[in-house]
Length: 263
Ligand code: 48H
Image (tube, rainbow, N blue to C red; front, side):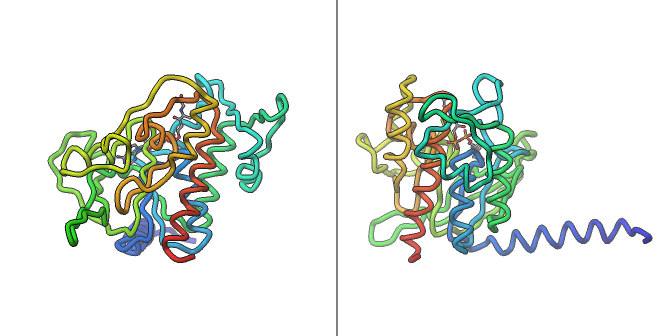
């Protein structure tokens, strides 16, 4: 077979922009491709929702690849075993209730499940702002403002573009980037005790893991927090390299939004 480089180029460009234009009106936009975002994307996409995930870096996975301090195994607790089981990730019981999984295998499996379920994954894409609307005095986030990560890294003055979304899930981890921008730029209060981002506290794994799931909820009209971002938003603790809470948080946020969307 002879090869025409123009066809290769056209194949990539037209397929990519088909994916992009089918994301102009999303059911759910997920910001951050760590374990919570990937699980949420997988669980929403497998129910047929129009869901896209935006990850600033070239690779998905956030903080999951490196396990603890680059020793690339993660620990998950029994309660979250079903999620990695469904993703086909082998686990070993180290002590009762404590399971270990290969961090690379787990990250790759979650990414694969999300993509194959139909989540549209945009890597190398940063969410730099949100779209906001006000009706009857109530503000709501109705979309995301995105830019190419290399543009931002190079500090180029290039304007972003916009996609609409019924719901946004903030899965940006410790930094809670999207909410920080929302609060900084708009005169709004979050659904937290202070109305602001409470900020993450130091290490207390047991409490942090439970709170990761408990604090997974809508924090502003149209915006849910999940994963580490939920802890930082509601002022809970960190937990180190145990990932069950992240997976359960992704599962919970997908179930809650699916209900809101009527499924
Ligand atoms: C696009 C963005 C943007 C942006 C950030 O940190 P993550 O892995 O997030 P979680 O919450 O799914 O998992 C947390 C876990 O990895 C962790 O850090 C734990 C368990 N820590 C415990 C401890 O004690 O330290 O992934 C977030 C992702 C990253 O890949 C970022 O690149 C990405 O979000 N991101 N993507 N637009 N504005 N901001």
